[in-house]
Image 1: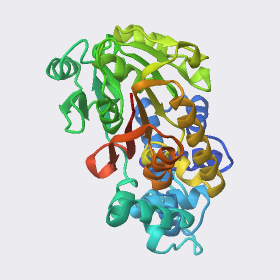
Image 2 (image 1 turned 180 degrees about the vertical axis):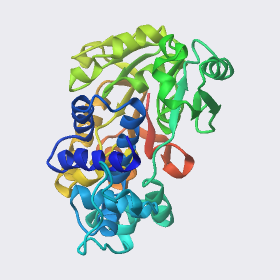
Image 3 (image 1 turned 30 degrees about the horizontal axis):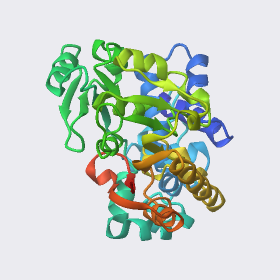
Length: 382
């Protein structure tokens, strides 16, 4: 496919997205309907689609409208590639008189929804503009080295044998940043043998904050796919349980645990195996720290949804508190940079519950390389 044809394909995919179809589903449908497209073409179309979704407001301004064609035209103009719209072969037709576009301004230029701008400004302070600009770019690819099985140096060497370049990253002791050959990771021997897992650097750093030691009984209450569950298992020999309100999210966890060489018990009734020495609550949140990876979430978030999440988070913390033994630990984490979901949520918990203290907390933003995260470690008095 020519670059122009790839732009046209991205327009077709984005038309489905604007009609309400998730981007991943729309991309899969396009790939199945266009078998002639090679892996390089599919990757290029995917990149355009996600670049546009990350920068939807600024692309709309530059492209002169909110249609799929206008968004891709704005994407091309931002990169000085207006020539892709030349109508040659399968390329999109040249811009018409009504497609002049304009320079984006203010929150629009930072691709921040208007209603969220004051929220993010208050939460991020002086870093607001720099963080929002970072969120307009693609996220790095990070790996977690399974330190229960190997070392970072050995993992780097094993990956290099298969043409994957990786280097240690400072956010966590287990972190590697992939600098070359990222698309080869999941087909590599190092991945198949459980030496490495795909996991954001800040997510790994959150787990490193938890005071884990051999023999502890631990619950990951909102396990999802189990990334933090496996990261905890790699740090110490634990009696480890995983739970999620939607059990289907954990479907791949047993196979991933077996690959990593660790044991994890899945439970639909975590209270039955309480009390725990440590409960991690990686709660559902706005996802504002991971908008580089899930840009659709930025545009789907509303105040009503945020309010519902705040109530859900508080309920999960209250439930978890009842399962922590005296002298135990409650870990609270979000992949959010919104203060109401983070420090304010922890402060409200401490106001509701006697006998707890804040032992540690940390805010992460993309300016440190990884996703935006918040983590707090709460100790229950003995």
